[in-house]
Length: 177
Image 1 (tube, rainbow, N blue to C red):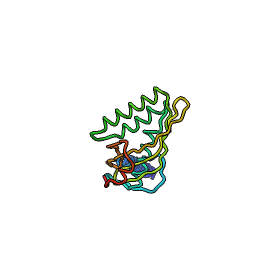
Image 2 (image 1 turned 90 degrees about the horizontal axis):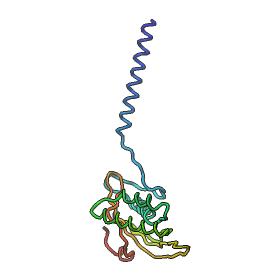
Image 3 (image 1 turned 90 degrees about the vertical axis):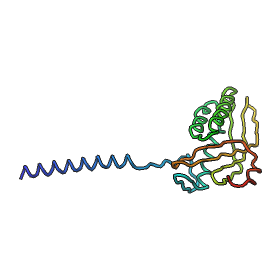
Image 4 (image 1 turned 30 degrees about the vertical axis):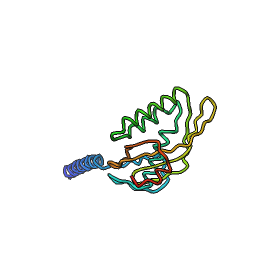
């Protein structure tokens, strides 16, 4: 009886170890979806190649704040985050422009905040209009600006393929991108 009990325990331990190994293998092969907007305000959906209007809007707000809410302490981290998410033929030009703007802000110790006022989404294009407030040597300077961000959704991620200053009213009238 003792031999049979030991054999049963050995078999049970081996089966449990195999189940543990199989569980680890299957978990490592599963798809993990990480939602990028740091602050989720609306329900949205994302597939491997497309996304809802709400997702584009939230990602647009996320990237616009990373690109425009800058100060000498955060400029390098924030701009590098945006640059890591650039794709397409304009990526180098956009990265250069962002780095150049960031270096200027850092060198001159400028604190800049963007306050969105109006925004809309057409397809994978996010357009936002608002005010940039810059603190330059203790003096506030405010400027009304509009930006257009065009996204490409690939493997459940939003990549920026265009990031430009634009005319908000003209973009509002233009057909969907």
